[in-house]
Figure 1 (cartoon, rainbow, N blue to C red):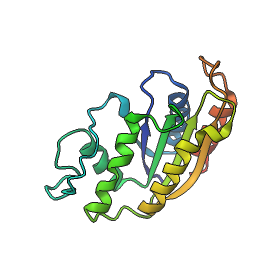
Figure 2: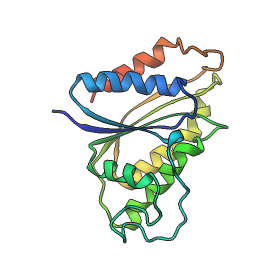
Figure 3: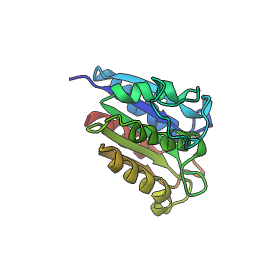
Length: 181
């Protein structure tokens, strides 16, 4: 059975390690007849949450017009959301963090988006896998609040000197994740 999958990428670099893993995931997921909608958050017009708490009061997720409203519409009808990002300064890159913060709109606006599947694809330069905790913990807490279930995590450390991303293990993990959906 095909699924509608939203893939949110968070790297501002073209051909980044996390983007390549997202592309590997997408390629396999599309071959399985899934409908993929990809948002490269670093290339979008997105502002931070203003905490006005008027979410969905004007017929759209956010009263303020930017690209989050388009993302929110797709998330509402998606079966699965995939977050793909590098670790920046031991945390989530600001480009995708803006989207994650604004998932708050579903809670404030009373929109039930529970029951969705999700996955995390991330990488870091250091060899210490705990460096990814700054991405994993907010991901885990956010999906718990939204009532989503994680179907897998692709965590790849030690990518600093891998500018061409020859880490076949990371690509294989992303492919395996797509195979299991």
